[in-house]
Image (cartoon, rainbow, N blue to C red; front, side, top):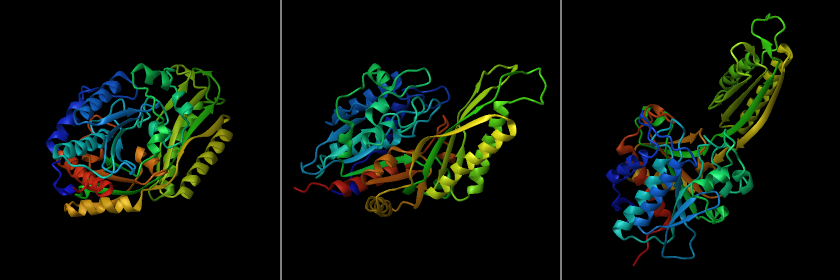
Length: 415
């Protein structure tokens, strides 16, 4: 049996996606299943139950990463893994991350239904806190497992309410005992994800073969001025918010001037003292820069610091620009990428090579292990939004390509 005649069920996959979407479902049709909440715990329990029904063995590590194992015939082979995440943004959609996990489950279900044994074991992974919505930075579960964060660093992160990551993990009952580093002992890793951009749908394509991830650098900018009464004069103000506004605009200008695939975003902004009739004394905001060229990305950071120094001098404020998180330009494994291309081509699917400008668990895994990554379209490129949507056909096509590449890598056991 080959991957092309494995009894994958697009209908079963879609039903599972819709059942998972009910957990944390929002009035506008999206999902709020943030990491380490009760809803996250409920989603994890559902995945664990589905895994038990087809004989998968669950192991949970100390960061909450779930690994559901299907044994292979050759005990000397390391597992071939499929993974993504179940956590969402506060106003997230039904498919971001979840498609990758449940597509992997569908591969396992089809193998179980057909009674097919692989040579290498298979592993289905649900990574903890990919989104970074509640606890920042993102991709802590995969980053911790790959050794990019220490366990202590992850477990001691706090959310906006001051809740510690490790305490929240214990509270929902998903703090395991396994060593996260055990997830580095993989032969290969595959991930399927929605594009979160418009290119595939716009060009009438069904599959995106992701060749590399853009480098990313996140900063935190703090502007300090002086409190003043809003009824006072304008001449001598040291308004931290107005100074920050110039720098927020500068983020967009720097990205546009950098050309190519540069991106620049301010996603969070906080003002102190946040009173209607007080000139703000402090403003803090986040900056997210991305580029396909590490050198160009470094130049974007330098440009931000130069603009900050100029604004500080002109407006009589203090500006601090601090590096918060960096993810390097990351290529995906050429052999696994070729395998995904071959699988899509054999099924006659329309495809293209493309980068990802967005962080994913696969990006962290690819810094340590051979990893392959593929996209399917999403309507209008809309994601991190309750209106996020895909078609059952796109989901099924991506799952079929995923299955073929995984089976080509793990091998079908011969009688």
